[in-house]
Length: 428
Image 1 (spheres, rainbow, N blue to C red):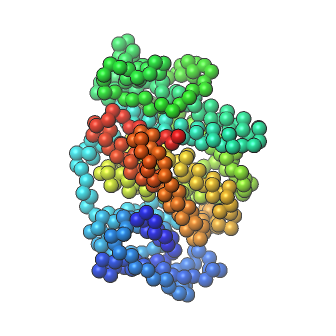
Image 2: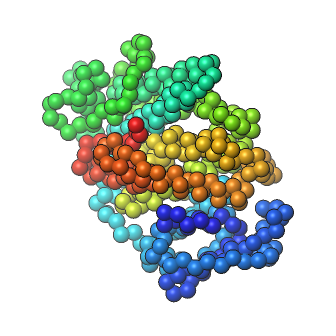
Image 3: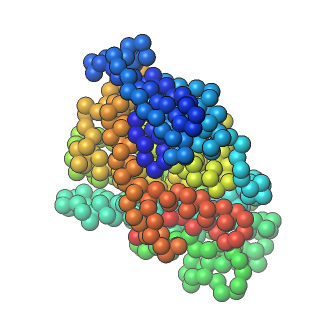
């Protein structure tokens, strides 16, 4: 059990949370070390640890695995705006309980209208994908600089350049303006090539229109022949579904390139944590288990940020909507995955803070973190979120843990029409 940044993480199976006036009472069982995780139930506990936490110290609670909370404690959480999240051992969100939200109806209406507009979805999705791929590319360039093996350095650098090509294709992709019907006329095609105020060859258009800004200011193109790379993207896309499929395809290619050299980012325990393919629900090996758990922590923070701003975390733009799927939270996560979540996993492995003994396999091939390892990862996650970082758009220094909230506010301002486009966070 850990408390950090106003979030209570419950990781011990059988923990019980009750209420005492304005305080939460937590009873955590102590199990024999040799007892297997699947047999850890309350009747097998040898002792109990008790803790009381005033409700005003909390903003959210995360319960991993079979943990329970009383109706009276839930009522106290709802009255004080504390969100209660139920997650599996892997960190997959199962349920989220919150009181009646005190949010802006007009903002949510704007979000829903934008989600129903294919062109608007495409514009926001393109910026989200560009932010993710640029951050992935920067991580690879950093790894290439730090690598002492020449062959590995060349391989990682080549992957970074390949991702740059995908970003350039994104910048050249023609997306119709949300306010106009798609047309095949030459005049519309000419204005569309400007990317709504951005000419890829000359920069921003000074015509004064409030159009989509250039989402790729940090890209230093290393493409020898970019014109040949984007030949298939020059035609107008009249089918909105094809447009989103194209965007998701570029994102998928860039992500595949990034993970193809992921093992090169590991300096220690490469054999133990060798990455072969991405697997989740459940993860099938140690590296996927660690990544999935950190992604779950990031997803929780993104859901909390979007909810605090007044957005619906289940109505997204890039990710398709499905039952119990926080699509907008998954959208917001994308730009944070490479440099925050993946980097933390790599650091834990390279510093040997996580090893083979921190995982156990279950029947069916699923791999899980041990209780001790989960607590260690949560501690490292919270420490990382306390580190300061400069926000390139706002020009101020913030804690990393504040970034999801800042990006959620930027997205909300775009949906309200205060700013022309959503700008992803790309650290220097």
